[in-house]
Length: 548
Image (tube, rainbow, N blue to C red; front, side):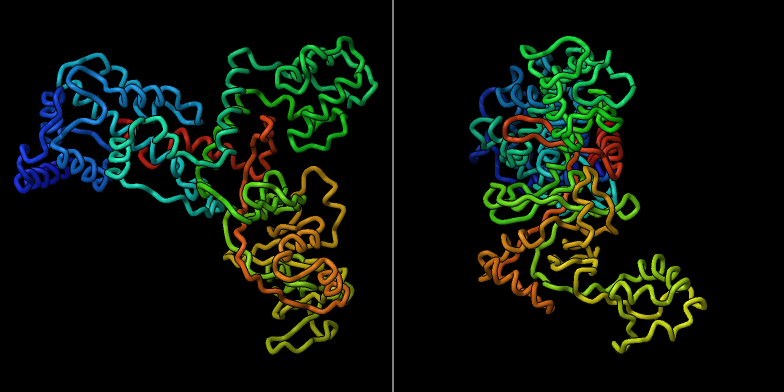
């Protein structure tokens, strides 16, 4: 590290020799001279601690920026903090509203120096604030952690990364710092609704949270139970039961049933008012865990494209729901079935380019070998009854009864299911080519959509009412609903190329807030929340700098 500092000092000494004289439009503003000289000494002596040990590019950008402005400070002056420095410190002191942690930005170290107006202390404060600002700006624009380091299934293209000099110049040029900081964070209103939700649940924690409800028999409307007073207290705390309407007694009355249904809806459960093990489990999640859930989902929102706009499809795996969006308005919703816990659907974004009506299903080799081969060894006619043909490498059909399946450890043929009602892809599939071979499709297993937890596929996304979705997508492509129905009824396979590419965001969001402020939680079906929470605490792009 000392060698790096020496190289930097040499570079800046050379830069200063080549730079125009200070009198040529580069003089320090009044009230900055003393602290400016100390900043110059800190930089030329290699004494500053900006960024991680390996982040030489960051060091060079920051130090070059200061050298180019004759070491004029951004955040302080000779008599203490400037207005922008105060705004930045206040923002950092409230950074937990965004699910981030003070100590990641060395706020305690900043506080220790504030109030000491010795030029050297002010110069050190300037460097601390600059380091904190760059970390903060990058965290707000792209997230604190790399999503791929949390899970390989997070195939996310992060928003653009801004250089340190660009960020610092933006802060310096801004008339007011707060609007500039606001511009760096996601502009999606869903992000800001989550910030408000986090504040709400922090307030609930500060007020004591809620007490767990004891286990017991399933409670149905009209029943009687000694747990009802405590249950009503919990419902009041989280906002599902208004205090002025709160009943008393041990009878499960209509008002309390309605409140329980609201709770169930907010947690993605069957809203039947019956308090069984699943509803009770969600009621007994501690407020601390709900806060952590909100924090990790704020990070996920920072990973997403900053301003998704126009016509796009948004799939939330944790919610098992699909939405078609047009200019931020939901124009179609549908339940979906997603991958099993051992066939987890990945998180990624791709463009939908075509649909296939009455598709074939080419059975993946993994399914052919693991699921179908054992059945073929027991019954060579199994595939025929499923409408699945056995094809050789030339595409010629093979009689399954002519094959000695018991001698095989893998299927050496291509298996293709005919179009029709038994087809695993149903009557239509929606293609957005990707390396995971994941797509949206119909399914003959309609009953799965009635469940509140729909985790049954091999990774693809099965959609409810697929022809309704096709109608929405093809509306501006020259296809009426009557034409779609006619093509499906014909039984003939047809590929429909889309004139416009449709972005498909496959996401994993376990907490979100509606426009009316209602806070929703979903079960962490793939157990990804804890991994991200841990990474937020221990990881991050500038983790090495956090301990300096």
